[in-house]
Amino acid sequence: MQKSLVSITDYSKEEMLRILDYAAEFEKNPNQHILDGKVVATLFFEPSTRTRLSFETAVNRLGGRIIGFSDAATSSSSKGETLKDTIKMVSNYADLIVMRHPLEGAARYASEVAKVPVINAGDGSNQHPTQTLLDLYSIRKTQGRLNNLNIFMVGDLKYGRTVHSLLMAMAHFQPTYHFIAPEELKIPAEYKQFCDEQGIPYIEHKELNENINDADILYMTRVQRERFTDLMEYEKVKNVYTLKSKMLENTRDNMRILHPLPRVTEIDYDVDDSEKAYYFDQALNGLYARQAVISYSLGLL
Amino acid sequence: MSNTENKQVKIVAAIKDGTVIDRIPSDKLFKVASILHIEELSDQVTVGNNLESQELGTKGIIKVSDKFFNSKDINKIALIAPNAKLNVIKDYVVVEKKTLHLPSILEDIVKCGNPNCITNHEPMMTRFHVEDNKTLTLRCHYCERVMSGDDVKIL
Ligand SMILES: [Zn+2]
Image (cartoon, rainbow over all chains, first blue to last red; front, side, top):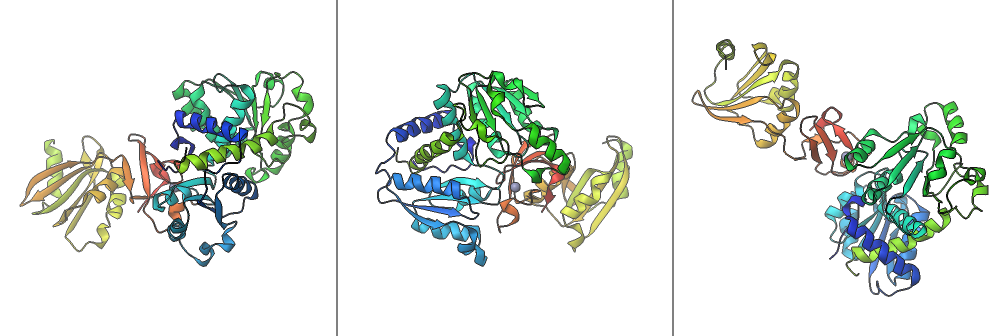
């Protein structure tokens, strides 16, 4: 069966676990012929080299072929064509559409008008589900399990879509959440309400310090300057929320630092040498997770 | 209906055929009138406001002759005045009493309050899931934002 992936909640817990198992297989044998004779369209209505290269490498390693565009200027939408018409046209040619779009809800709409499955590679500040799946894969791989972990989320918890999706996805696995964020970027009330409804314990912290010593996963996010109305506040926060290697001294041996990348100032470069720094491996896991999602969307697994 | 309220209704002239929307909170009357585009109707319309009501203190009422609203319009009223009563009149007699209820999905009734939502940029229908009937909490099917009835505009 063919199936689109627009939002992480489109997958059940069982489907997520299946994807992680497939991803582990692709990690062992990345080069396959699953997509022989298939054409995948990568439609990037806004540029994102990192995500596009990851998807296109995934297609290439599966033996598929790629059509598409890497920014809106070279697409027909720059000539005023509606999204619907672009998607209708492309779904005549391709077996699968991978798309990134600056507007929220674009991928959901595309999945409704397309004849072929659609994978959302980011729709504005809404969803980026393959990021969540690679995060889950990274967590399971480094911890050996998903259940009963102390997950610390640090930085911009208000606007950061990756933490919101991760929070929803990990909810299946009895986590304890710790939210570390400045006042301006606190986790929104609706997510705390979600945790309450699910019976998930959570603790909010204002500072990044020794309170991370209980962490199994330290999920760092970018704190963006444009989120602040008061720039002095930003300068203060920027320094307080930077992870430094000496902060890792008393953290657990199994603790791993994740970050969706690119980073700005939130992780010092001296942390990169720590064996607890996992963010570059995490990015590579995205390739395997995307190989799994692409194959699954086409009903080929 | 109490006796005084009964008289109040009669102050606003009875109609032969058409629709009476009663028990509209006074502060919502003109909003209801506007979403139903009452001002564009050529049918005979009577509007009364700040009438005494035991239940509401004061209330508004709208009577439109020879006009029968479809369910899409009725759903719009439910968004603003969920406790209003809608009576269909034929030959001076109430032939149908409709209680308003918000459906679980609102299709092309409200506009998404998120300016970055695809529905505000493409010629397409909007779609909202009613998450909570009482607090009027809506979730956009496309951008997935949760918003209150006050954040959305009625189309
Ligand atoms: Zn929306």
